[in-house]
Image 1 (spheres, helix red, strand yellow):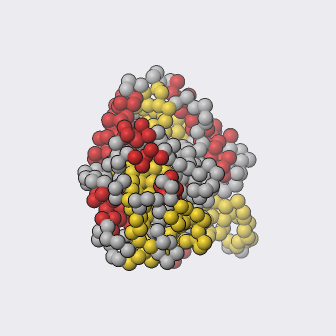
Image 2 (cartoon, one colour; image 1 turned 120 degrees about the vertical axis):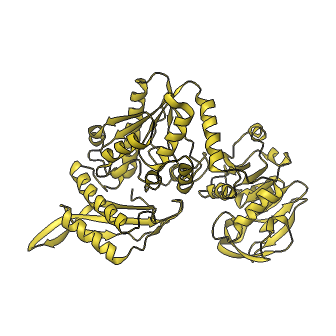
Image 3 (tube, helix red, strand yellow; image 1 turned 180 degrees about the horizontal axis):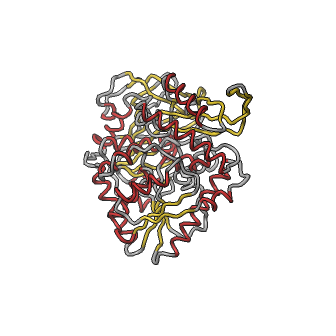
Length: 509
């Protein structure tokens, strides 16, 4: 396996993803990992990730420098390389000309890192510091116009580095370079699969939980469903799933999910009706972060209440995915920026008595879908579009009321029906309606109206880290708009969101 040391980059999970795509297991650990734990993990190779800080910043992240004496191949990427060079008495300074975006990489020396790569190739740069002096034993492998030491190596110590980012799609041969490090230099074998991962996770859950019991908040989405299947395999009767109807679900969601759970999932599920409890606490709340915190806290409170009814419950399981973690906090306590909290990350109370189990927190959605297929979950569940934990609570912009929720449910149901009918449901990452906190003048019949505006959001994405607005056919958009305006009382205008992520996020709140 390969160990990735996290220095706080919001995209460092892409490194792990590229390694896993090559069928090699990869694990991410924080930069404050103890050297003893690294030895116990016994990786075949180590990758030091990028990060948002300068090596000269106060409190810049660092890893135990004894890592460089383990005789394990280590690859530093961007900040990870700069840390390596600085720690080994090389020179790193603020670059005279910062380098962001595409650059032409000129490979100066033949090396195993560049097997199958042309002498000149594109790469993606994103750095404000540069190396100006290499430590003893290092040599230059490649340069760009602005960066003399774009790739370096110390063969004796098995230390290597890229100033550019091989993990991103903007470096066309970056995946090949990472594979060269993982396979050719570190000597890993391509023997990791979703089936082997499932077996490993089930074993780890058994070992951790032993004879205690676990509860899980089941939403009906692929994340919590896959998590519940893994837990059920590991624990059987010691696992209970809890489905909470928070009053923020889509149209007929509770009925449809109950049917699916009973017919397809052979697990113990408890259904809790809690609509009034959520809506009472959300009265007059308009701030999106406050909404998320309130919803997350009520979820956690209900779990703890239900846990008391089940003797021996010590764990709360969640289907947390890596994009959730990244947007809420730095993945492992590093310096990444908080974008927005997620109910299963930033919304849990600090005094929660249950221990967390999150077997999918290093995974992206498409990987979870592959795992679900391996576990035999039906395509109907596997291909459900993501639905946020706070539900319609963050799609009703502004104050949440029963009336506004009903208006949004009807609009959203029409949208999804048309998306299905047009054959676009699987092609889109997400498609949903948003109710805006403003009204506009309209004309229906011979009368003036002053009603709500609905926004339609549809995006394409591979992993939710980035997303582009979907170029849906005009006829489809026109049909959706006409149906919503004609069939949903309270809406007289429909707009289409053409924002990409970044700079926008997928959800509006």
